[in-house]
Length: 255
Ligand SMILES: [Zn+2]
Ligand SMILES: [Zn+2]
Image 1: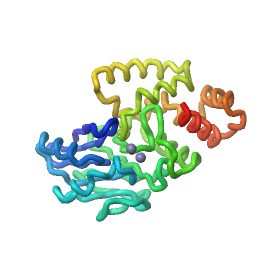
Image 2: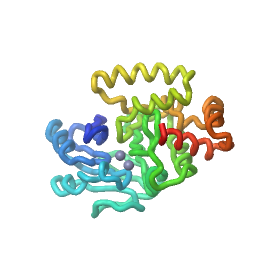
Image 3: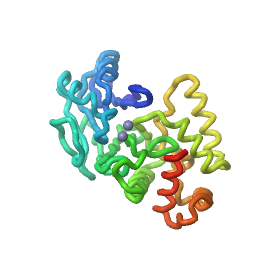
Image 4: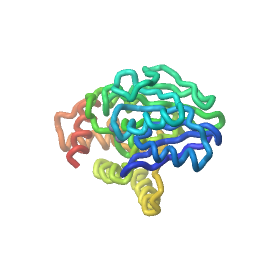
């Protein structure tokens, strides 16, 4: 299985997984980017997976469905381009001979879902939309800090080798904030060097991995003493995991 990020708009990635003949795409906000990739690799689009309702993730769905007949899957609780198969936590989808597992991860939006798949002989892949970014997480447009913390904890519990396919290239700016939170974190310092080298060549910093994110992403580290201490310096009322996470997210919003 081949995994490719298709750049779209300013900083979106539409993720494509293909076996040389058939393809699945995740969150096609832009149909043109997908049509080009299908043509370039000689692929037939078999399915479209959507994580949440925002236009930069859904705007290409109808054109792609109409042109290719691809099956469309998305969250059961959100406004979606119909028709589609709606998915809830624990559901699975069979595409390309693979089983995609569905996790509900509310926070960025109320019904946001993520997909996990393990191609034979390869590391698992997580398509997490706008829930988890490398060195960051999605803004809380519709959910609460408690929901988002729970959602991120579920993703952090996936195997360390899981490839993390985020829907935006936000890594470099996420790292600037992450280093402000944890200036002494050595893993963060070396990852920032690696990321700036990739971005100088205009290359994607993704996929990341769950193991890497647990080492460098402050939003997965609100149980770590250095992060708790830093947050309490700013907000003395942050005394439990949810209030620590909420204070960190508020800080990032204002950063
Ligand atoms: Zn979004
Ligand atoms: Zn987005």
